[in-house]
Image (cartoon, rainbow, N blue to C red; front, side, top):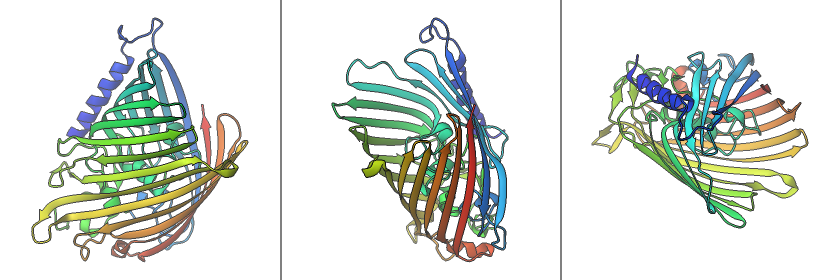
Length: 426
């Protein structure tokens, strides 16, 4: 068994053991309470254009067309998630999100698993701490059950990447300071096991899908010659394991969020995994990845909910080349989106515009990781009941990526993806 997997199993088992073992210091007199919920998502996708990256190509969506670009229909179980929320008393709790879906390489895996301590406030300042495997609070879209979006089936390019590669195994502390009409949240964390973050962005580019990477999963890479066994540097397999510790260095992130009158929110977030790009361990590279994320969210006229988010960052991998001052990969990445949504009773209509690009600063002639693209999303959802939701979505993606030529595709690709999702909570 791989060492990284052993370490992750050990940490998660310790956390879950702590969650389920009675502790006189924190347990209630009548024992912990467990809230269990099952979430299912059945999906129909009809797609034209290039094949999906999940089939080892460079397509941008969860679904893709046929090799000749013709439309293809897919019916699948997009996700079956089991969610456990354990409360020991008013201060201590635990959360576990495990899932099955047809895109992951194991039948069942862990998305999040953490302990949380949130003492009752004695002033206008609230404190909380959580430890384990969790998403940093970056996404403004994925606020629904099982880290889904209530607005669309497919999250933005930014939050698609967060779902795929950004998962931290660490310790996070948060302070919330409440005023008369506003609230200030300050968050800081230290973490490990996210050293390969940036691999997908570099070798595949941005994507738009609702794939959630898990604790022990591998995500596929296209069979590009520059990342295969005949590459000019140490072999990278045609997959990445996002939750992995490569260099034994601790990363960190911090954020500031401000809420005004409960309607408007603004925030800034900084992430740095402090990866060592010189280290290769168990077929995975350490990637030095850092980024800023900014957002504005609020309710505008006519009860329209608006979300705008922007991310900018850099990722590097491989040894430093003295003659150029760069590494084998040195790439900037940027993306932004604006989403508008309105709810009419059980109905919701949402639309979103995305822009994304990557800028390669090293060895472009041999390994061109440049990319530019846009996408437009239109979605409709209907709450059939308190536990049943039907969603329909049209997603259009227009992108240019020169590396497509290496596997026999035109660099310029336009693609339409139509999806229908039936979600049920049990």
